[in-house]
Length: 170
Ligand code: 5GP
Image 1: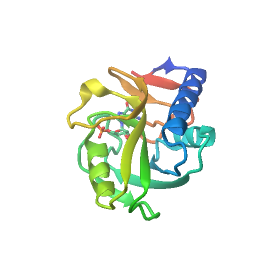
Image 2 (image 1 turned 90 degrees about the horizontal axis):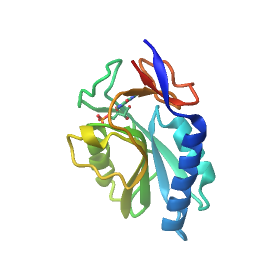
Image 3 (image 1 turned 90 degrees about the vertical axis):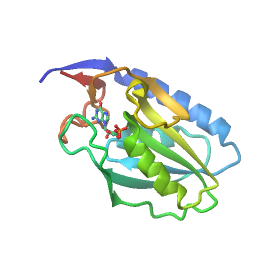
Image 4 (image 1 turned 60 degrees about the vertical axis):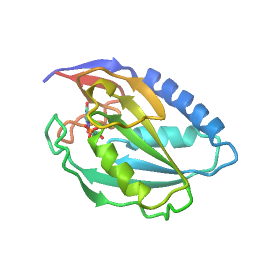
């Protein structure tokens, strides 16, 4: 397998600064809970949280679905649930990639059952053209049309997460 750089590290960091600025101004005076969807989100999540100008609390959720496949199965189970109580809180769900939207739909339904005051979605990459379930990404880093991406936390079979750039695997 070969890989080509699609989004260089510096462009990712600059985009995360923009997202942090937008979220900070939208949530001015509030203290949202940011929930990262493990594992792919780790680098995006930490860069974003550290650049926010508002106080936040953080938590994580992990849904297993992908395995080593390059296509989404749609079958989800929660390996780790959030631990903070969400009732009445402003919640921002942070995801690495939204592809078909199946994973996110399951997680959104699950979190809504915990009765947050508000729930918004922030994704580093939106593959909107491949959407099978209606999911609105409120804060989107990059729109990507196709290809399987690795790097900056994204893996293929647990490999390539360490790469600083986002690359297309061929
Ligand atoms: P969806 O359920 O929206 O189809 O898939 C969402 C999940 O599939 C993402 O959280 C991510 O883990 C994985 N995924 C989707 N597209 C890609 C991709 O291009 N590269 C990697 N590494 N994972 C992907």
